[in-house]
Length: 539
Image (tube, rainbow, N blue to C red; front, side):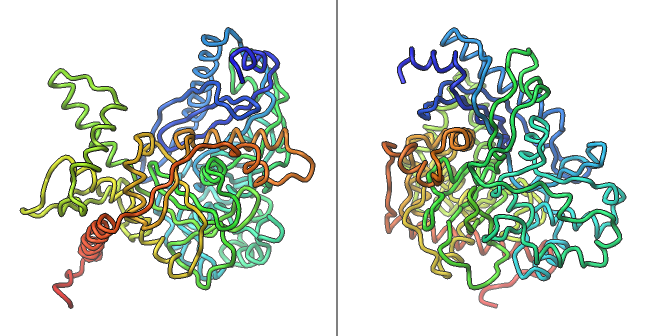
């Protein structure tokens, strides 16, 4: 669209709003009906560690939404001279999993427990055995069952539990629904019905510890919807929550709320069988859409779904880029102290390029664990960011930054090896996330880490909010009987530019050398955690 056409679309409200509540940023994106991003707004936030739990204040949810939208709205007015009054369609996405529990008066019963909390080990283990299906600690049902096992007093008062995206959607529409992809991180989904697995629900309800409560599991979960279904409309109260100025009209068509994994699949055109994507941020996860079920149940592999209900093997590591960003902040602070106010983008460009051009293939013998929280894949119970080096390690900036990128991919590599053993096949893996804004570097090192081709699209930095806007446009504009993959393939990504890189044998070997140190170090750490003597040599 030309600027004149964009202005006309804005005046007529023929635009889509996508909002995603990420772990560090609430971001809103406004797009035209031909998928161009018109404007964006954001709000920086962070989880708090309170009383042994990672949480976000509910007041910050609304402050974040309103601030991101206000910033977006101001940019539209500044650039196009248009005050936003109407938005045809919108959708809301957020970090998956976690636990938001409400009573019959819609009062939040306990502070929001996020996906980052590794506190449900007993529940996750018992439910995995009961269902013969992996239930990770992050999942909502694991949080619910752990609260039951802990005999927490609030459980008897539960009337509704949901995810962060489901909560925001409920408040804006009055509808207790959820996208099936997000729902699949609450409770297992039946592929045939795109609803919660009834057999597993029956098993859960039959547990003696559950039977003491008056509620039924099927009644307290939000209703799953597949992509393209109308999930309600923006109410007058919802319009005021989003835009307290009163400028925004109610009535917008709203897509089913989705998790960040689902929007990542959409933003990378990875919703068909044999497609895959990797999203890198505070956490890191890969999503491979399965052709067939896995042979075994693995504690490191989640089975979730696409926004249309197809099964997906998800490898999720709790920690990825947080420690890398902390070191970048340290370098920025040093630059400021010596009078060099380097721009953030330029700082990352310099640091990342040093990792590619000035580092040893194995990061010079450096090892690190960017564990800001517990890591389920490696069984580390609590956050302990760690940098390890030998006296003869080559401690340079290039090696340091390569190590940070390597360790950001370390835990997920363990899970990806399982999928390789299961002969899970992909035609292509597309990567997205902020680390790919610097061209080539993170993509190249991820290619070597996974020893497979990695594609990065021109829109890699747009991420989840754009993916959510696409889901909203699909809900409002899809042709009769049109599938989501057809909409993405032939409309959204028909002319999308991308670049694919292949692994280099020398750098693959360098990463494998790093992984040996990484895993050896974990064995020592786990032995210490369990208060057992570490193994020596080949014992």
